[in-house]
Every structure is written in structure tokens, then in C-alpha cells.
Image (cartoon, rainbow, N blue to C red; front, side, top):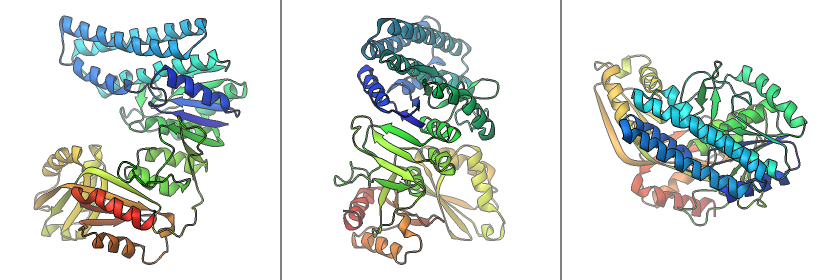
Length: 462
């Protein structure tokens, strides 16, 4: 059994959904399919929902009506193109139309109440995937493949109630997924499961946060003991670096779980970092493939680390970040200052991307630029001023992360990398190395970032 996940670009319209159906049909092993919302739908749901609280009366009604018509047109055109069987097309249209009517009522309720909670936002966002699973499942049935559309919850995905970033309840999830999906697959039916969305124990819709569809595929694959988890996207696989920066970037045919985890954490957007863990824990290979170049074998992610003489296997770049430095003489004599700081930030769902303590009296860390104002406000109010005397910010910086499992235990790797950067006349502002010794991350001025990526790629990869 395999799990096949298709992202929004792969199911963006009727022609692409028809192409996806062909890929699924060519796979002869039993399969579970996971799909995202059609391209652009999730962003449109966020936009329309947030605009509801600022509208009222006839304008509110008109806005919801127009949005419903746009959504209906988008999905009707897709199913008309993808589904050749008239009866199945009509059945799919009824399902799609019913969901859009339900969404219309939800949006009007939000507008009239002028209240938008994380719970109601998750419910609205669920409609993108719920609409798409009906179109994809209908397309499969039209070409003779037994199929059933299922929400993540119907497939057995159960989470806590942390709306917007729900956490799976793993022990219960494994039993439910096996009970819901295995008999169906064994009977030759292909479930089409909504990525990104699940539900809590009460059945209230939850979402798994950014990268949720990849995470859904990995959770289902782990629970079912899948032979392979396939992530179908719009690129051939994971590249040595961003080809928009370095034209000579190459496809990496094989990565270890740890290498893939570090690359995805530090900006490689092909897969999301949290989807690696379930596959890694159950030793299930992950293959990244291109929906539009299906004959390419893509990138295979497995446990065994490939031996290579290269200093660097891949380079990731993170833009739009900021260095925050806290300083104060009293910090040196106060236990657990870092713990207090990161607890405050974590409680506000602010991710600390990188940490560096220059001395006992100061602490530097990196956050996304979009989180910077919120982080500063929290630290000003919740960290004692008699311990932390001041705070400084450095804008316009970027993180570069170099990855290679071969770094572990190899002498002189950092020296070679930093010598190359020195020769390029670029200053390094901050350095960190993971305990796994698979990556080295460092910060440079944003204006130097692409230059450094190019220099390192040319010297160590090309």
C-alpha cells in the first residue's frame, strides 16, 4: 500500500485533476490519495472570512453571494473538464453545490455576529479540501476506479483542539486510521482524503497548520504501515539549492531523513519539516515527484545516509528574518533566562529559528520578521527589566544552511566553508551547528545572501 499526496498546483483545474487521475490509475499497488484544496482556494477562503467582520447589511450579502458564485464556477468548470461520465458529474456537482451552500451560511453567520474565532476559521478553511476531494474522487470513478471522498476525520485523523495548529493524538489516531481505511483499500476502493484538516474528539473541524497536507499523508502512511509515501508537486524533487538563485542547481536523487528535515526547516519549500517525523519513526520511504514529469524518479528520502565526498550536499536560504539580542549584566547570575524568554515566545506561537549565546550577559536569537514586533512587545512586558537591561535588533539579514550527513565526524568542514565565504569578502554575523552535525547554519547580510549561496554551490557542489 502507498500514500499519494497531490498539492494545490497539481489539482489547480480540471485538466490537472485529469492528469492526477491518470497518475493514480497507473499506480497498480493499493493506494490512499491525499489532496490539498484547488490552487488559490485556501487563500481566497482566508481573505473572504477576514473581510466578513468589516461588512454588514446588503454589502455583506452581496459579497458572500459573489464569492459563492466564483467558488461554484471554479469547481464546476473543473469537474466538467475532468469527469466525462455525465451521471458522476451530476452527482459530484450536487455534493459541491451543497458544500458551497453550507459555506455561504457560515460566512453570513460570521459577518452578522462580527466574531471570527480560531474554531470558526478552521471550519471555513476545511471547505477548500472538502470540495476538492469530491472532484478528484468523481474523476477517479469516471475512469473506472472505485473511490470515496473522505475528510481527514472520516479517515481517522483525530487531534486536540488547538485550532489553527492542531496536534495529532497519535495513539488514538493509529487505531482509527487502520479501522477506517484498511478494509476499504483491501476491497479495491481508493479513498481520497482531505489534506490539512482533521477534527477533535467532538468532531469539530481542526487544521494541522502550514504543511498540513504533507503531514496528513505522512500520518496516514505511518498508521497504515505504507510501503512508500509519495509527495507529488510541481518540481522534479529536492534540489541542491533554489534554481531561481543558482541556474546550475541539480536534483538530489537521495537524502536521509535528517538531511531532508534540516533542509525543509531552513526554507526548502518542497516538503514541510513536520511531515518527516512520522515517516522516520516508522522507517517509511518518502518520494518527492513532479506531477507534470511523472517519469522522473524524483528524490527518495530514507533512513540510510548516502556516503559522499562532497563537503556540502545542499544549501537552503531563509529570508525575512531578524536577529534579536537581549543583554544585561544580571543575566549572567540569573538561572534559566533563556528558558523564560523562549517560553514567552513559544506561548505566543512565535518560532525561534536559530539561537546563539555570545556570552553569559547576552542572548541572541532569530525570528521571522513578521513575528518581530510581537516578540519585542512580549519580551518588554513579560521579562523582568532588572535582569534584561536592553534589547537590540538587526534587520536585513538572511540565514544560510548547508547540509550534508557526511559532515558528522569529518574534520575541517566548517573551516572549508567559512574560508570560501571569507574569500568572497562576506562577513558572517552569527553561526550555529545542529547537534546532529548534519547542518551548519549562519547569518549574513541579506544583500550578500545570494552571492554566498552561489559561491558555495560553485565551489562544493557543481
